[in-house]
Length: 125
Length: 125
DNA sequence: TTATTAAACGCAACAATGTTGCGTTATTTT
DNA sequence: AAAATAACGCAACATTGTTGCGTTTAATAA
Ligand SMILES: [Mn+2]
Ligand SMILES: [Mn+2]
Ligand SMILES: [Zn+2]
Ligand SMILES: [Zn+2]
Image 1 (cartoon, rainbow over the protein chains, first blue to last red):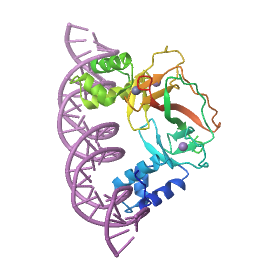
Image 2: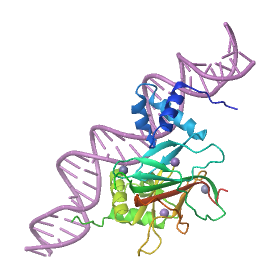
Image 3: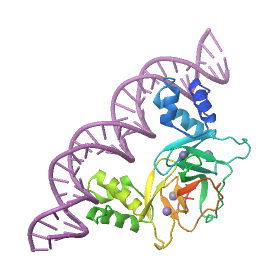
């Protein structure tokens, strides 16, 4: 099997994401990390962290892709909560206690969910 | 006020989307329309159709953006249903009768929703 | 029907985002 | 310390989306 290694870039990027109140985009991470590592490395680190289920990827309707960490415990956690994307301040936040209920036809196999709401956040309302 | 005009490009693109079983991406529409119009025109037509609420935009977690029409009646309809993105055949479909229930803190103003599930569709399961 | 108006267009140029290949570096294991 | 290879930097490329501007054309008024 292929093992995963702990590098300084990976540690720094994960640190950034976990300590951020809002979800971060690749561009924001690049700006925050400065010349820590290459653009491509950031993409690869993000992919790795997503695959390791340490962070999750959020796609908003306006096309932006952001990344956030899971604050909850690692036991049987799922990323099926709602995300809110503010039109004004452009912030994307996890609403970890807002979990939608729905009934899917049983001939589908769900592997991942992406619930994103757009509008105005409490700060911008 | 600025009025909207009916052009051949707009009519053809809407025709494509409404008659498609699955949601279509910009690239797919471009391939299907051939040299009907410019790349940029497709973007502008799609934006117009979304603003007119005739079609809706779907952003999947893998980064692809697709467009679909509303089959339901035009009276008080909303686009708050679930979309399914198949990992294998890459198809994106509207599940118009799957509408999630959730309770959002009241200090948010919702203007749009984007619910996307990822996994295997009935054809690929 | 013809003239007017501005929405929509084509084209070119640009920006942002994401991907791939390859030789090099550095983490982990032996 | 040496070996194996995951991860890296760099360059080059691909895809996606945006903007400006002069031209075309659909809608409306004359
Ligand atoms: Mn989240
Ligand atoms: Mn839909
Ligand atoms: Zn806000
Ligand atoms: Zn499928």
